Length: 250
Image 1 (cartoon, one colour):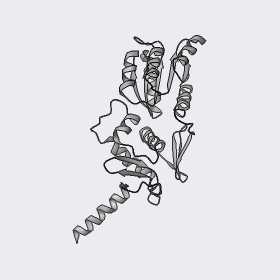
Image 2: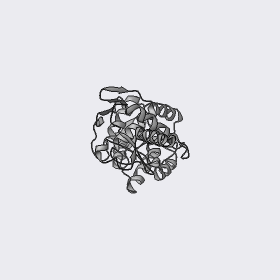
Image 3: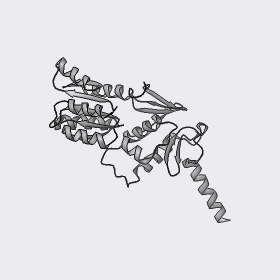
Image 4: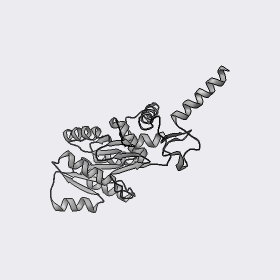
């Protein structure tokens, strides 16, 4: 999940960024309302964290303009002010939730998880594809009871693919939601991580779930879901290569 954090207190900003990245979120950070609005207009975010008291445009105004433009991105407002009027103003401008400073980081995470389940339909904390199960609260994955050891970024990529089960997602879309603005679009990092995931979730005796759609991207799902056409798993690709090699030797 890719988040935008708009916070002008650099100490708070660094603290939140560090914590979010440790929880496998990709984070872009800005320190003014004008920058927040600009970034939200040119990038795709799953959620925005807006401080109310920002230089330039206030968090209220950024929120109002985004909603006026038709944006449905979940917005969590942060403020050092605890007045009821401020909370009401934020919610009336289109904010989805409100958190008063100082706050405990675990509460911020809980509110983010709740908002990320909310956008289009209520999504459970546990996601599954075939016998692959993700616990989004614990950020853990198992397949047929086998625990899968994942890095933060591997988990983030897997969760994005699971949330888009059965749909082909391209490199650009993956980069927008799993990596931040420092991602190099010309690198092969996505392919590297997809191959790592494939080796971890698709065991030698298990049905392949992670497939490559040639020229389009990647799709997560069993071949019985209609994803077999034009899809290559790593195992099938290896088998084709071995076959080709044997014919050549003959």
